[in-house]
Figure 1 (cartoon, one colour):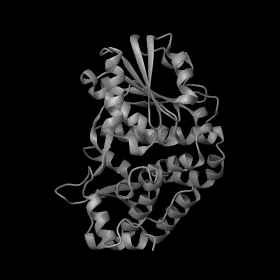
Figure 2 (cartoon, rainbow, N blue to C red; figure 1 turned 180 degrees about the vertical axis):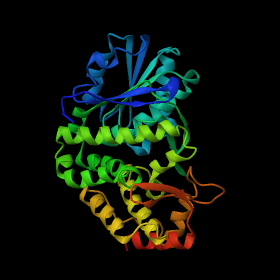
Figure 3 (cartoon, rainbow, N blue to C red; figure 1 turned 135 degrees about the vertical axis):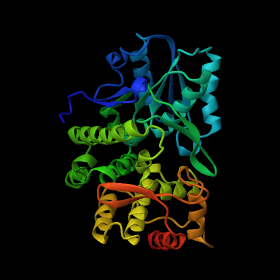
Length: 369
């Protein structure tokens, strides 16, 4: 796609349908929000990193639509995806006497988006919100599809709601200020779409990774659009993760265990997912679903993207046991049985269980010694 061309991807969910807008110079353009319902107030939810960069321009862009535009600034990081941070949003809404027509704007990465969406779903039993993602990970994954949540010390994203935004505004220019580590973390959520749905896209990523890492606008635009298209296709068929949507969690069962086991924020979410995809691919191979070449190909791409491919030790006594305990506290687990997203053939994923003994072997192979 041309970097200057506005691209849109539709999420088709009947009366909850909406559009994702993708291009540079979008978030601070009043036209990006002109079709939204007018209201007396808007609340921008951002964090201490993104707020100083983008909150004021967004306030100015929203001024034609809203009589009052308030801002709440949350602490930055996965470690703050908590009830305490969520209550800061509610405090701002209540202190400013915001009503049920107040629109929330999530300006930031996945943590801000998840918490803002959860707050919007809960305040007065539901107020409108808009996603304005400023990280690659949020633009290609967490801002799309209506999953909202906070973390619990015992599990990631275990408390939340399905709640769709009115619109998603993906401004590619915000990726220019993204730290390189965050860019790589976002690439994990991009790479996952290849093994689960589109091996041609995986091949494109292999051929164009240097351009992506150099932040060439056309390359960034393509990966955001294609990722959103695939996620839109999945969410349109299974909004509430009753079946197909679970394939989007490829790498996440292992990844969430890494995040919870190390402590939220030690590894970025995308780093844990990248490593988790390597572990899930290894498990797929041990169950004779894919061959060693596929595992090598995926692992090589993940490493070149700047992501870890060796998992951390979570316990000196029984490391594999610690992983298994953490993975049993997973949204896909049923009756204590862990469900993994596995690749049954390149470009296709399934959700199934695996013997603990085989999972232990994978953990032992994948963990640093």
